[in-house]
Image 1 (cartoon, rainbow, N blue to C red):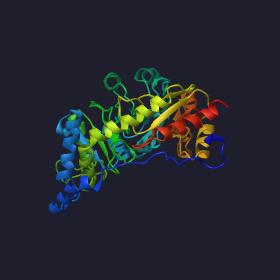
Image 2 (image 1 turned 30 degrees about the vertical axis):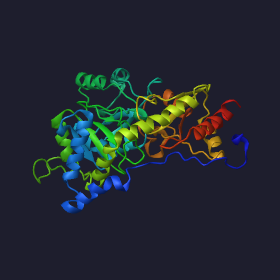
Image 3 (image 1 turned 135 degrees about the vertical axis):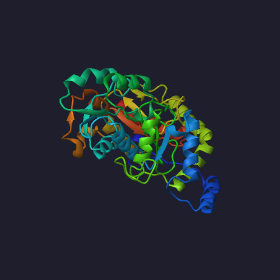
Image 4 (image 1 turned 90 degrees about the vertical axis):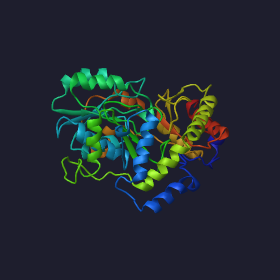
Amino acid sequence: MGSVMSEPASNIPLMRPRLPEVSAMLPYLEEIDQNRWYSNFGPLERRFERKLAEHFGLGDRQVVCVSNCTQGLDISLRMAARFPVGYCLMPSFTFVATPHAAVSAGLEPYFLDVERDTWALSPESVRDKLSAIEGPIAAVMPVAPFGASIDLSAWDAFAKETGIPVVIDSAAGFDSAAGSANPLVLSLHATKVMGIGEGGAVLCTDEAMAENIRAGRNFGFLESRSAKLAGTNAKLSEYGAAVGLAALDCWEETRLSTQAVAQIYIDVFSKCMGITFGPGFSVEIANSTCNVLLEMPVADRVIYQLKSDGIEARKWWNNGCHKEPVFTGCAREPLPMTEFLTERVVGLPFFLGLSSGEISKIRDSIEYVIKG
């Protein structure tokens, strides 16, 4: 079998992003040429915002496009945080962009543990821990892990009951996202299921907050060229909007194709013992990644074996943000579930065009380790 060969039996990358083809983007690019408007909220960017609002069933002013998801998180925290300094509570089990955004917004990450079944923070659990945290709590930033749905209404209730603002990091959650009074930030990076190369969007049904975020992405200008808020430059260019409009045009096709790959994974892995798919991975939601939870703490061994077989795999979130050198000094609670997950969660290849045969090779390589 491939798992015991000295040379890789295949070459399967972790990702192979696919953005709209040039032919699909060309009408929008020609429109840019005609308009000679390249950035600063041009007609395509404004149309893209309206199309996104329509997609999510929101009002036109309840979606704010930004240059990338990290900037969207940063600006949302600046506008929402109840103190200019203080803790931003967040999971350690997340991508480093989450704490980086908090630091950029002037806040200090405080790492909390996640729930075993959801891989996410629980508003009930966070509420129970508030009294034990010494120091000002400026905001909470829950993460929708790998695009899985989280209970937005529960977080809305948390914010109302505690008075602590909430900003939701739903970077990979394009197909599971919905409007919320709390800012919810999406990534439109090339690696995401609805990718435009580089970009992001903030969904927020609180229109006053959305307007502040809109100003925050443009140097704090609010209805004038007077900087009334502490902002930055996080505008989406007309070229990014052109790719986004083309991507929305073919979204249903992309969604169905992505779900088809997920179905192959589910079928091929159906009889595997000691392997389960992560929260949110199903044919109900178009995912950007495929993460599996191993019964045994052998994630590193599995990744090594996959590499030996010519298959790229990864711990998308490494060993938790609390172990990243820049964040080791941050405050945190005990993180047993984070440690549990980082020893067992592996990100597997996932992209359009991945075949049943390739997924079978991935399964065989993992089983070689599990079965010893």
